Amino acid sequence: MDNKDTTHSHLLSFLNAIPPVEFCCVYGSTLHSTDPGKSTMVDYILGVSDPLQWHSENLKMNADHYASWMVLLGGAKLITNVADKLGVGVHFNPYVTWNNKMLKYGVVRMHDLIQDILNWESFYLSGRLQKPVNMLVDNLDIETINSVNLRAAVSAALLLLPPKFTEEDLYAKICSLSYMGDVRMLFAEDRNKVKKIVQGQFDLFQSMYKPFLEEYEGKDFLRFSSSKNQLANISQDCGLPVTHSHISFLPPTVRSQMGMKIGKKKVISESGKVGNGNELGFGSREEAAKCMQKALRRTVMVSSARQAVSGVLTVGGVKAARYLTSKMCKAWRSWTRT
Figure (tube, rainbow, N blue to C red):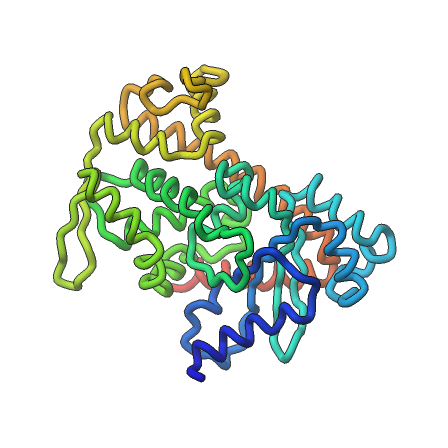
């Protein structure tokens, strides 16, 4: 068994210690660690059909994963209510020690996960799934559903990019979408985070987005040329017809918000769906891009603030301070490093 298979088996083995899940993926530095022995936190997203029932079962198995005050005062019901009503539907248990590894896992309702993937309602987990992940369990074929999310991410990024750019620029713009307006980026995140993610997982981004880039090339939206370092240089059609096509690939929620931004409460086409770029009345690519950016920034700002407050409450004071200190130290190093 090679190192990759060993890592995969090790990641899967954690699922034996918790109740069954419908979906599980691992993300973050685990995917591209150059030092398998390095002590880094392994990040999981777990999708379950009923979070209340799942947390009830998990409390019987792993009560020490949760903040003690939540266990004592309300148990599974309180945990679920805080995630749903205060946060964005995700409950995180960080700093879980298992099999000599430090883990963090977030639990989300499958319905909420799918809605965010399709509509960018909170743009929280959908943003995470626009970056490389390792799917370990996928009972509802989230990988296929996520193709809608990936295509929308490509179109959103292209609207924000100039006529000519590199392949790395494209992935960096895609990666940055879900960080626009994120309150953590103000003080608790590495300012070079996007660059590090893209450069560290470049081959994964390539394989992830290749089908959509080929699709757009076939439609003459994009043209590719090779550079000396074998990275693709890309030029794009910035005309209004293509701009309207990109807008049509954005989630309905985003298009509706864009309609409201230009003074229309909701623009509905004859088919009953939220209008595309042409129906929304955008007269220029720049106007559409600016409007979309404002809509995404507001969504991310609200959801990141809600999740931050929820996170402080659900992990407990000591763990919250530990996590925030770790994040702020990384941010400080990124700002002071020359």
